[in-house]
Length: 263
Image 1 (cartoon, rainbow, N blue to C red):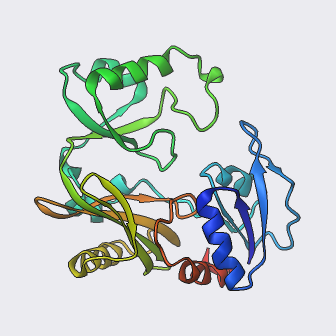
Image 2: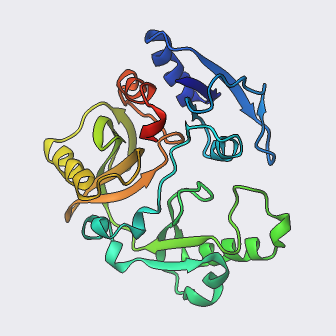
């Protein structure tokens, strides 16, 4: 497998794992708004290339027909088999950005929001209705052609849910329907990175993978512990998700032996 890395703190961690496994890789920068890479990678076999860095790398992978390239995923909120396990999944409100000013009452309530697509246009976070409406109006004040690629657009579908007190958050890396590594990344309000997971949380995550087999060849799943028990937070593109304290040698090894037929 040919590894192409965009230079970030997390990909430097991945490079250390690749070095230990004696797997070669190359460093590249992404040209803003264009999506080209510098230097231009010399591709040995387009059917054996994987890319890690920002989510926008999928455009380069698609344009150059690189496989597996970037592992695309479907919006997790549309996966009916996961609905019973979602955090506030049953009470979620879905609006495109253009519908927010009229469809979201400006009543001062707080909402957790994130784009439905795993596009990184807006990180999941809590905002008041006033802040959300202001955000929407700023985007809507622009013409579509004025909005840079990778930014919120008029038709970006957003999910809004009631904020919930979260006690712990874990990230798990799934490759070919197997959880290959994991990390605790938040405890209460503290952002931490420990390579550990509670036994019942692992069992819960295994159940999520089993409930929706072949959701994607490789992806990241985030789960949490709340006052009401364990819940599923979201899925993320494995190529652009933070590593925290994942076992990167295990993760790299699980991806490096991919063949075209497995993508």
